[in-house]
Image (tube, rainbow, N blue to C red; front, top):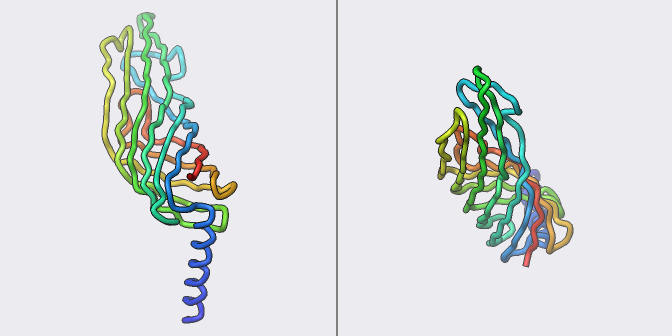
Amino acid sequence: MMKKILFAMIASATALSAMSAAHAEGPYVGVGVTANRYDFSVPGATSADNHSGAKAGGKFFAGYDLNQTWAVEGGYADFGSKDYSYVNGAGAGGNVKSDSHGYYLAGKATMPVNEKVGVFGKLGVARVDNSLSGSGLSTGINGENKTGVYASLGAQYAINEKVSLTAEVEHFGKSADQGHKATGLALGARYNF
């Protein structure tokens, strides 16, 4: 039993030291693309266009690796914009347009899988601004700005000691009643200074 524990400790220390070469302490910046879900529900409307779907957006983030495990990160994500066109039972048309973006600040914990690959989780706070405008049945519709919990699970692959690729599932607080939904996917690239 002691041999197994000792072996596990040595393997963990080796993995952490190998990972630290690819993810050194210090600042980093990154850019990425996001895939976000939108959903619209206008009472009394029948769809002339798809009332739900995905939209691509962009992301910028920056952080500081305190060590090979812990980091602090902040970022901005543009979730894109999406329109929903509809008609009502009387044949009158209308439209809803949503445009959303968000900010986050989070702590990040990374665990190495091998020399090149690590898995990570982030937890913090997010602010999402959802702008809505409409015509027809949705005239006067208002956007929702929400602050909530930010959480993310993902993986990163070190191409070399300076450049890494990332993939993650991100959750930006609460979903808006109309438009942007809180959970999406992000693919990115980061540069370590």
